[in-house]
Image (cartoon, rainbow, N blue to C red; front, side, top):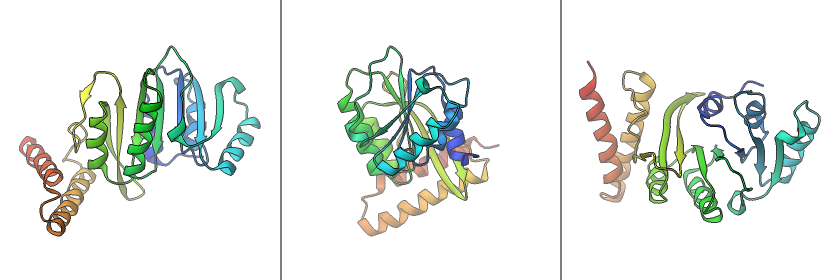
Length: 225
């Protein structure tokens, strides 16, 4: 099955030889299957979801596939309780398709439960991107890469994060914007308009977010020919 564009981009962004790759909240498992089919991505691929019928179906399909049984594992559990296996290589957790607050809760729990594990995250939250970025920066995570992807008429941010010493995570992104692209301009203006509405409703509570997006618009516009 062809992946939705945002999942396809997530897979292509995987940049390192991980010992374990976790497809979290895996749903039908399409991303994990595609990763297993990619010869450039090594390590064990884990399919994790809290819904038992989902995990049962994924496990059945994997058992009936040609994939080496040593290359995959399935897990029915809450990501907040995950304890990662010992590994001499980095581990990657992919979390896509959940809201901002839940994304923050998941990442915070993984870091808390695995304090001595070298772990990285590929995230594609649905909402609250400003809050996600601010809170994950507080957790000490740093940026590997970030992208804007338009999929099925909607713009998504993909944020690649590390516990290592990389680039500081910007609250509205500082690498991903290219305002020569219509999708990027549309997405930036949507965020500005959203926080302008929030600003009026909450009497200034949205000021930091609104100011950050306006600054991106100002700086990027100044760089355009």
